[in-house]
Image (tube, rainbow, N blue to C red; front, side, top):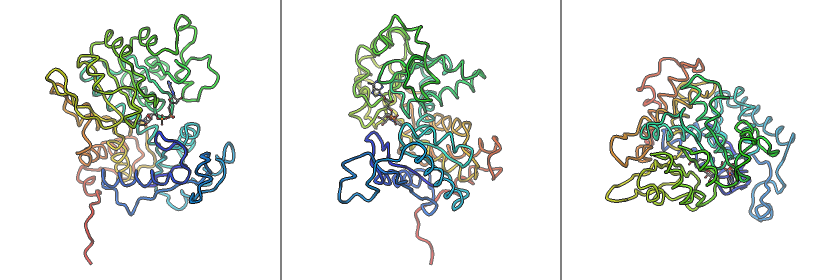
Length: 406
Ligand code: NAD
């Protein structure tokens, strides 16, 4: 398992150059803790492409190249050279891309998807996690996923990954093409609703751009106006804009849908689009909430509401373990879909106020179920090199920290 970063988009905090290695080490530690991946098979990799963080470049203890980031063909050539070398040295490795900058992340993923067994946690892991959360909300709201109207506030790496993974799920449910599925989405970025007259859209944003002629009467930079007009059933925040889901926005949404699904995913907590306790109060306990950061249960009018956290650690370690156990040649959308369903199936929603996602305290159990589901999907997709994988095979692959006999 190779976790690779170029350090440009570390968490929400930006360009950390080669210091980004810490995130690769951290993610691998989670692979081991949450899914029992043998640390001997894990390798963290920081690609030194320079850094645009001037403070770091000038710091006497900075270990990386003191140059601005490579761009364009030079950057692409260095990534290509790395991939080809890594493929030669580790022909069976899983390439987990982590915290690349917004402009590069999806291009690298698309370029190498079929060349190496690869996956981007910020795009695909987040997308699949949110599918797991969204499926849980639909079980309570009784509005099927393909009947939802979804505003995604913040159309960056995570926002586009979420839109892609949910639309893939919708296409699977309805057997309709992407052109139909995309009608459910309204993506909002820093210049407002994404429309086809905008000239600076990323490829990912362009796919979801709305016809600007349909919105001429509206101030599309106002989330409140958009909520009034669109009447969303689901509102997802991946913008890093603290408090963007204001009381009037949330109350307006609750006026139009009985159980509004609201997912303020930006983290850390101080960057969240809304606080769970406010969402519960403003909607009188009706909001179906998933947050990006851990959130304490909320007490409201004698009822306790547990709040699920869309923690990617619920998904990617099991996805990785399943990929390793099945020795899959690639990670397909179907494998991601099954991983999302396996996470969502772990939650028991029979009592009022139940969390919509499993707790991190039972990570290993969740990962085992995810890994098994991923193995079955890989076999079905024809990308597995190992056939007939049982639950016991997955259990047997889990590394435990015990001293070897000498
Ligand atoms: P990103 O920088 O790629 O995307 C952020 C997007 O928000 C950008 O496109 C930016 O233009 C947009 N934005 C900025 N100001 C805005 C405004 N006023 N209105 C609307 N959009 C605005 O970052 P990312 O990697 O996509 O992460 C975004 C947030 O999501 C971060 O806070 C991150 O922590 C969080 N996140 C959560 C999870 C999770 O909960 N599992 C996973 C991934 C990311």
